[in-house]
Length: 133
Image (cartoon, rainbow, N blue to C red):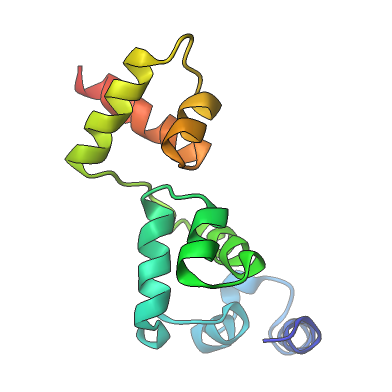
């Protein structure tokens, strides 16, 4: 949806339903926010899976042949909707433990760089590992 069209729909919703978006009908909110669960494509689900597993936007854009801006926008939408719940497989956690142990003065950015992952994913997974101890 183009930004001009989206802004026009938002203005119309404010005019028709008032200043509180929480009170707007669900179909109006979904129209403005874009895809619903049913409309997601297999490609979109793959990209969402890669985002949830912490891959960087640059890596996903390159691997899936999508514009970087598209990946960044999808990540932003997922974050705003609280859909961005980072996950890791047992192998990924083992790799993270190894990298943390073998990097001199490991910080989240350094570990993320070595692993090719997002620093927020590294932070969340390190917290998860600390909780398991």
